[in-house]
Length: 210
Image (spheres, helix red, strand yellow):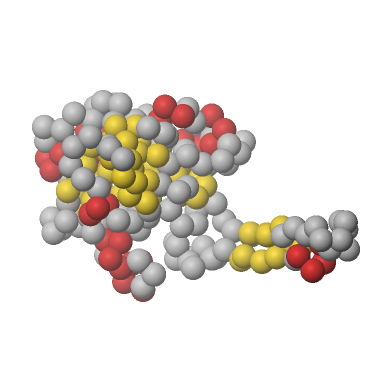
């Protein structure tokens, strides 16, 4: 599956199959070793500051406090047009929170429509989130920026403030209002800016998986 148009989809294959592995081990013992070749921006993924800034924190530098068990604030932005502005977040306390922007664009997931005309945050929305000291920001859209704007102001502002970004979320309509926690932990890779995550929220005793 191609996540971002122009970037290749992953290639999933077998490095060592069970039949071949039998020749290496005692009779009755076998293993499977899989192989994945992919670009870092595949599926639901996280961007660290290094994705945008050469001197920014890479995946290995991100603190767990900004990635796991982070209290959630939802921004419900379905049916509000493409540009999601700061005034649509008015009154929200985002300090130390995972701000998840629900646009409903994931309904187009795995279709050609997903790549064109997607919702995005405006520069003033990014300023609001950075100024409010959000811990992490996620969106269920193709890009948190308007892809027609080569400046990428939202990536620049949020990652410049040390705030990781999660893009291509799905299922935010299932996230309940009230107390829940967000998890989006990547592997620790030095000199890497992005990587897929299994993003989910936990509310009381239920998990809502992405």
